[in-house]
Amino acid sequence: MNTRLIRLFAVFTLLAMGGARAAAPDGESLYQQHCAACHGSDGSGGVGIPLNLPDFLAVASDDYLRNTLRNGRLGRVMPAFPMLSEAQVDAIIHTIRGWSDQPAPRYNDKPVQGDAGHGRQLFTQHCVACHGEHGQGGAGTGVTFSRPREAPIMAPALNNPGFQRSVSDAMLKATLLRGRRGTPMPSIKALGLSERDADDLVAWLRQLPPDERPARTNEEPIIRMESPYSFEETLDNLKKAITARNFRVIREQTLNNGFVDPGKEDRRQYIVYFCSFSFLNEALSIDPRVGLFLPCRVTLQETENGIELVTINPENLSHLFNNSELDKACARMHRLYVEILEEATL
Image (cartoon, rainbow, N blue to C red; front, side):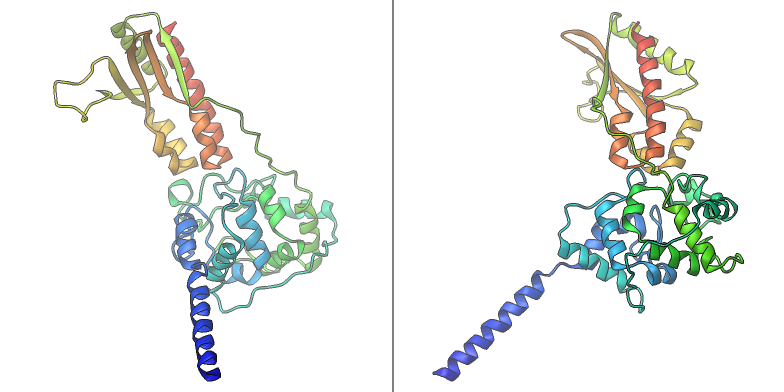
């Protein structure tokens, strides 16, 4: 009897262990779901920086990766992932670690002591060309559409609060000493600099003023204006206002076109699509995802209250993309929309 109980206990234990293993987060699936779209399915990069680089994995600690997933990069496309559990975050880190046979580095929390003034001089001489005068990083995103094709990646923003909270002084120093093969960043030794120079650079990087993103205001999702004119007059005014700002009307259609049989469209609900190709290229070079709400469009409709013009509010949408450069372009788009609608209705 005792033997049978022992065997049953062993079976139940094995089943429980198997269930625990089955319930463990799948790091590969989580990476493909949350990270691959920007960093590449194999970590080779894209909109996001490449993670599958020997020199990156040699200096990136697990704490850095964990903090990066938690903090994100405010205003720099990379979001934070507060919804992931600790086990899920650890599973993603384990997947990233699997691209290298090097062990994860471990750093102490001791601040690096250096001469920030001298570090500033070194930064101006050797780092500004890629990382920007204020450490703001490269413009645009990491995809080839928005950067020179000879540049493997866009230089990250060193003054980003998410980066500053995630990286340790020791990791910054290790990165400077090692460089990053496969990117434009050399080691400081290749530049003829010393370890003390690395300390000075770290001291300066820690003094960079943070690029804090302005707090989001409560923008309305749409811009709406009423017109005192007839439907036909408002439509004519709208197209004139569009062309007056060097935009081209590229298409017109009823709102329910394609949803009803031909000839049954509601002519009192009308969409005008327009575009400035120079503005389109500029916006796409900042962030290709802006194409989700381009070309520009205005809906003209007749309601029981009269004629109204409606369009999206780009400033509301831009906050969804976590790209401070895109915020500026969308603020410009917002001004253009308001000017066009005002001219069509005043």
